[in-house]
Image 1 (cartoon, rainbow, N blue to C red):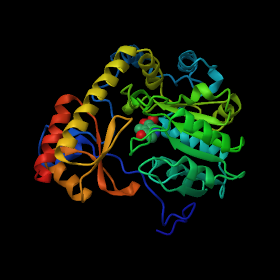
Image 2: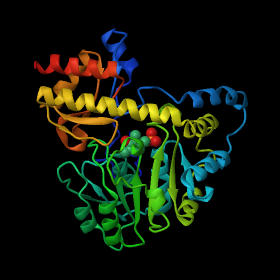
Image 3: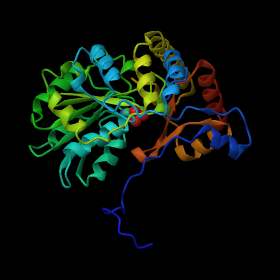
Length: 362
Ligand SMILES: *Cc1c(COP(=O)(O)O)cnc(C)c1O
């Protein structure tokens, strides 16, 4: 075909999702595989969200509330801000894209770290930006190196806190020091998809710092601790000017009506959040203990996943698949010797460790 693509696509980076359970089970002819590849909540969706969905299905012939009135009001209360500070999206992924549409022109410099969440790269190439990436330092996003890459013309800096796939996080002291060096006209995205799991002592809440730093844009998702990845809903928190600019370029009905209702119920389901965080903390300790006993190096995590050094990772990934265990290769992030493993239920965690013993001949 000779259709002319919109922009050079020779080195375009494409998102590689975790392998779906159904696909592996079809391939292997088995029925009990486990997926610890996409950092989903192993406890499932918030029960309150599920209950709320029951009532909402009767209205599926209606368009959703395009303004997300109730969810934005609930979020405003949750964060102590105004509804006008919020932008909803079909997952955080879409909110990042909306931000790019609102603020990025071809050639604009954007800055993020090597080994940072790949979607920053994807939305930057979507708008043909000039991507500047700072090397990581010991699996951490290096804030000094990032600040060095920022100039007056830099439109956006992306920081994942905690980062995926490394699981490392930035504390408030370091973040403040960094923000002090960044021009006020540069937006700093703090992607807090895993904030509930972070246990760093001075873990910052970017939405709370908006008054002081109006160039911050916090990103949150309902895909992780709230257990609603399948519904696709996330949000951005920003200064009203920024949120308004984003609102003006989004699709009219970008969040579906079931997602709106479920997200609002999940936000208020503190029991489910607390249980999810507790199960994760327990699983994290289990992995730290077991991986240490196995002599496998890992990156200490602030998230619900761990990056483990296994050697030639693609081979180990394939061997784990044959054991019915789906983990995530991170070679695309520049880590060809690591696998990213989501922390699951105790049973899942045990199965992962057992499979690792077998596959690695330990
Ligand atoms: C999982 C994840 C998200 C959430 O993306 P959704 O589109 O909301 O599912 C955002 N940022 C990071 C770093 C993630 O790992």
